[in-house]
Image 1 (tube, one colour):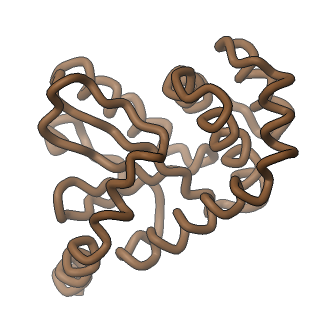
Image 2 (image 1 turned 90 degrees about the horizontal axis):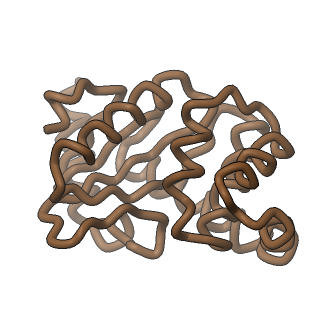
Length: 179
């Protein structure tokens, strides 16, 4: 059954490549990158926190890896609220996104307010951020909905999940297998 699921995922990934690798999403793109990893995550997921450390190790050890970050809040209302802040950070100050993302992944933040405070700590302008959350609420919710729809279309039913090439890699994988 797993093999069938993987084949199915592969087929769907090929047909949705443009959407999956859409670089309007927050991303880390070093010069001359030759491989892209798309990560779907939920900030309330312990495995995602673990996987984030692995992704950061990978980025440090391989200077040619690009990462596209996609919020995939499937663990309830709090996850959704924190992801709204995450998307708002990327819309407000894209360059500070990865710093915020990493801070959030290594924290125990469990509310929208706490996430906003954390954004301030990593240098995001909080009043601009609050303004984005209000003025771009529709866009933010649309981005999250699109991520969840796309994820389910390509067979993602848990977090974290990675898309590398045309392959879906579910779960928190070790550095070796990501490499």
